[in-house]
Amino acid sequence: MRGGGTAEVFRAARGFDSSPLYRHLLAVVADEPALVELASRTRPGQQPTFALFGAVHQLLLGGVVDPLAAYYPSVVGAQARPVDADTGRAFTRFCLTHADRIAAILATRLVQTNHVQRSLVTRLGLALLRRATAAPVCVVEVGCSAGLNLRADRYAFSVGDSTVGVGDSTVGVGDSTVGVGDSTVGDSVSGGRWSARGGSRVHIRADVPDGRLLPDLDRLPVIADAVGLDLDPPDLTDPEDRAWLRALVWPENAHQAALLAEAMRMVADDPPRVVRGDVADIGAEVAASLPAGLPRLVVHTATRIHVPVDRRPAFDAGVAAFAADGPMLHLALEEDHRVAPSGRAGIGLTATDAAGSRRIAVADGHLAWLEPLPELGTPITLGAQK
Image (tube, rainbow, N blue to C red):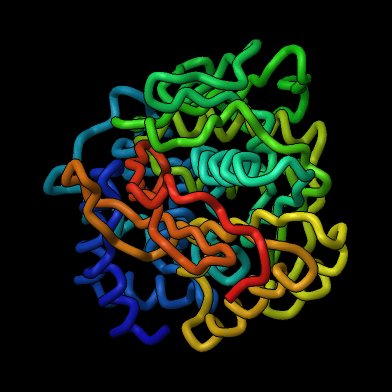
């Protein structure tokens, strides 16, 4: 991406409401040519905002000592300085001092944010399919990163006034079981094992002001197969890969970091099948590996945004290939900026089945909240895709 285009990406970026630090730094980068040039080294198709901020965060979490760390709650905890007149200068100095290391990260890493809260989309899709059929189903996530959200059936959820999947759940959004700045976060791959009797140690909470349109999230189909696709799947047994996933969580979002750490520990014990490759190239092949005739739930959240524009038609065709050998419900939470019924700005959640596409909810990009739309109550139609 050329410098002018990169600067505009930073100026126009939205969705950073939960990070006052990053929201401030967007303008700092856009107005500093040296930072724009550095961010332009992000790999093609990847969003330079997430990539640059993630690279800097990784260095700070990894122990680089610098005054900039004082602004990062993830590094220094509750005593972090609020954004002030020196923040931009500190960030610029840090980036220029460590430009080579940052550039190396940008050249080798993909934006693979694994926000575990987004597994609510998968859980919702499973419940919608169970409402439509008693048949076993296949679950597919495109752009699955480490595959954490493929285990949505094993997590606990508190959605509005209802809670499902709870047994020995200990870590959730808003919990503090894993401490901010704890150097052990994400380092262990032991513990956190799931069992049908015991419930899940991963507990996700989402604000849903009116859950009457939601299907029963505790009534799920049998999962016959689950598979993820990713360009470069992180290895949960690799400390560097875990560190990158942690760095992609924004500095203020301690609850997300704790949830990520617990999910990584749990999923590392029983990882789902993840296939390396571009859905545009391997979608049809992976689709053919699924049991023929069974319904498929295909999900992607904040994935298509990272696909180069000229490759998006091929991406869409790769996703559509999963409907070739079985009826498909396709859920997408992508760059569809909408205003929810309450007035909150969010992203549209789109469902596509044999009857066509419709927007069924508006949600926060990280699924901190979800507001159902009337279309969520429309029964899923299973059959040949239009």
